[in-house]
Image (cartoon, rainbow, N blue to C red; front, side, top):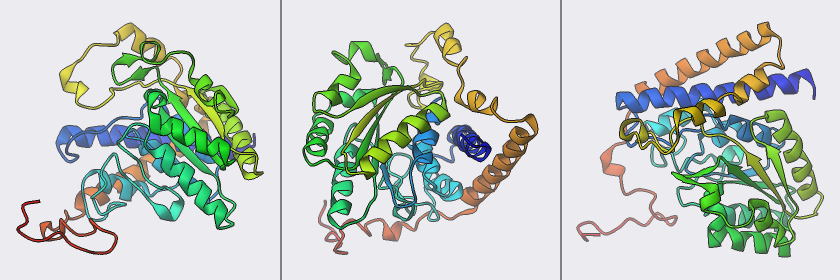
Length: 324
């Protein structure tokens, strides 16, 4: 891997980490209402996979999707404004943390419904191929999604029709508060293999390892060889949701969390850089996020008068006074 590639991967993992930390601060101050699902610890997956994609490629994401959205190229300032519910957000403050989208850079939306975005990615990739567009779709999902029927249906159609889609499972070991071994019978990769989809497991804490595996899968899809499946073994360093910062659910011990943090994806990638380069990128990221916070907090909230706008693609508005 070239020096420029290593620098770019570090910039992405560092940006995601600091974005999430700043977002958590805004949750605590009340600027982000309702909380977020932090991506802290899983940055290498988003960075590595998206580094293997081109500008015309597509991603779909999850309720824990900030990292994917940033890695695919969304503007951090507009993303943070979206989390804060401001009109300058990616979706004018209507999508929020779990539904951010930016079609201009191939982000076909995060999705709060577990497993639901697999069908969207598969359908989008199939439709683009029918139109003669040589793009690949990536669907990110967590280990909890492999038991969802809609995802298995997406596997089936993708395999049958050789759809250019890469399924990326971020296995952080937990489906909310349940350990994966208590929720998943068999193995995660076997889910895909049952449909004839090539599946492999990769170190999800190492951005370069993820990039290498993702690049092979993307090239395979682009060559018309159909879908692939990557299980990225990763670690969630923070809460499932920031609600836990107050609730203190206690399903993971302090020792377990400490062991998980010994393999920090930011540090793993950072050790591959010269110290001066790492510090330069760190300063640049801080400047970007300082501007993003200022932009978000200075942006106006939506006017309640337009609350019902855009509910229908046709532009139709619900009847006033219908009680609906």
